[in-house]
Length: 74
Image (cartoon, rainbow, N blue to C red; front, side, top):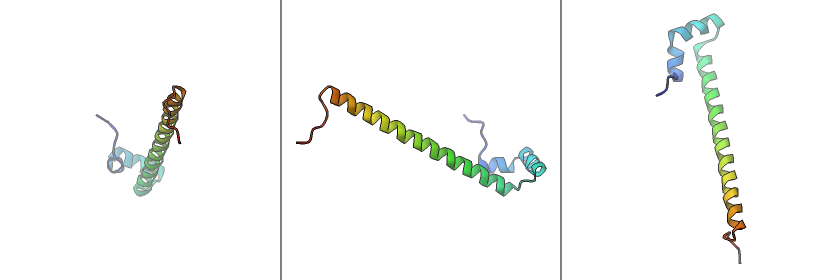
């Protein structure tokens, strides 16, 4: 279970609305900032996952070649 607010919940939260007003930030600008940050975080996670999968692939390939079970082109 998560306690995180969705973007729409954060924008409509009364306490956050007070803070936005005090900071002079429009709710739409705040929502866009949160959306942009979420997209960037997702892109970073996908990039890390791809790197981890590539690393594992090449580790398995190297191990297979070391024991002589690698693929050979004839």
